[in-house]
Image (cartoon, rainbow, N blue to C red; front, side, top):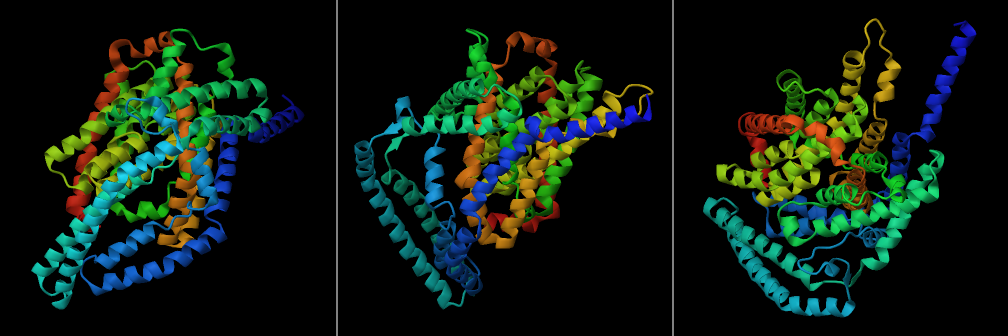
Amino acid sequence: MSSSQDQNVVIDVAQSRISDLWKLEDYWAIWLGFIVLLVAYICFASSGPQAEAEKQLTPILAVLNAEQERAPFKTTAWHEANRKKDGVQARRNAAGAFFSKYLATPGRWATNPLDAFYLSEDDAKAKRDKAAEAHDKAKAATVAALETAKAAEEAAAAASFADASLNDAAIAAIDKWQAAVGKESKARDAATAKGLNLFATLPLLGLALGLFFAIGAIFMGWHVPRFVLAFLGVFFFAVLAMLLGNQTEMRYYGVSAEVWAIGLGMLVANTVKTPQWLKPGLQVEYFIKTGLVLLGAEILLSKLLAIGTAGIFVAWFVTPTVLICTFIFGQKILKMESKTLNIVISADMSVCGTSAAIATAAACKAKKEELTVAIGISLAFTATMMIIMPMGIKALGLNQVLGGAWIGGVVDSTGAVTAAGAFLGPVAMTVAATVKMIQNVLIGFTAFAVAIYWVTRVDRQAGVPINPFEIWHRFPKFVIGFFLASVVFSFVAGEAGVAVGEAIVDQGVIRGLTGGLRGWLFTLAFAAIGLSTDFRALAQYFKGGKAVILYITGQSFNLFLTLIAAYIMYEIVFPELSISLLKG
């Protein structure tokens, strides 16, 4: 080939790489994700909302600091100020109310599914009236408990907080008051029921999301009208899955909307068959990659550091160890024919479930069916472990910090981690969610490492030099958006300070918009997976049960190693961190 031809090839490759910016769904996941993040920032974290949060928090923080210095325990005034602090939320504005209304999912229901969609104003009033008496009783109990707590606190203060028995009595009384506050809060929620009409909002949400994703579809050369129509069909399945996942018994047993989305989709695909008109909307990676970019905004550096070196070690030492060992086990012991299936299951199980599976599958060019197998196994075991692990932790008598760290390092889904931690208590829930958040950071690193390994070892042809562009080509680009979102909002939260940062990012950007939208996108992706899955295509991957054996063996190793690492970190190396977390 002549030099001019070589030059033309280079130019063609460069032009192709540039055009990827508006032709590939990985990049469109970034662009669309950042459009949402920009809207969320303007609504909840820009100078206006931040200034308002600072104005509200300044006197509250002054009380918290003064009370912390006045007594060796958290006083009634401290708790009251802290509750006010938690009530400062940027999403409590017009934008927050708008997004809350139009991103609302089907609610909880027991026997009548219509209860999840509609509650008239008259029925809402009747519900409020019915709950008013219980709320009044709970409120009276809270007032009485507060008086007792203040009396005990005054007795301790009269002794200059030097009498340990009086201090303990005050702490016990304050704890009882806080328990009463929690009960009153639940009663108040029931007594403030509002009318609901999702039949009016859900169609608008479906259409808005369809048109939103159609922006990228235009540039990627898709048939836009067909895509939007098909999207609405997939959205219907997502709504149905959320409805079933919010049924009280299903919630109790951990059969989530994601499980229903895949299950319902598979049922249709393998019985009556997925209709042709619906297939343009089965854009699994388009939906979930956009959701993963939004997830990046939830990975805040301040939260990672808050749990200390212990949590980072548990997540970052155990995770790659389990991933590598599980992959080797699959190749050397189980002799799995498909290396891609092996690594996708290993990443799904060891890192953070579906998110890691999607990124890893892209990096190693796994087949769609292999990704479906990995996600299906993961969801089945996640629902089981979400129930069993808290029970096992209580039976073993582990404290909330150790139990939470164990759950966070083992259970795959972030939502399941939070729910499982909540079974143990608020401290366990916080620790579990934070350890899982630390683990989520490894999504990008795992994808990058897998891309390098596959290019340099697995797919490399003898005598052919390694092409570094191939590594870049395999690397899932949406991970860049994931990291950028994390960096940007970590900076925003850090610059604002801990309390203001929580008010505008956690209680604004995330809870006000991105978190709810991410939930919809993930459920849409799972519905698309189910609707595009043929059992016959999956059957070959379950022959001999190797995929299931790999997951069970790897997860068993993960359970053991995570518990050991968490015990060493929180009970031996950093016991003071565990004590401080338990004290709150």
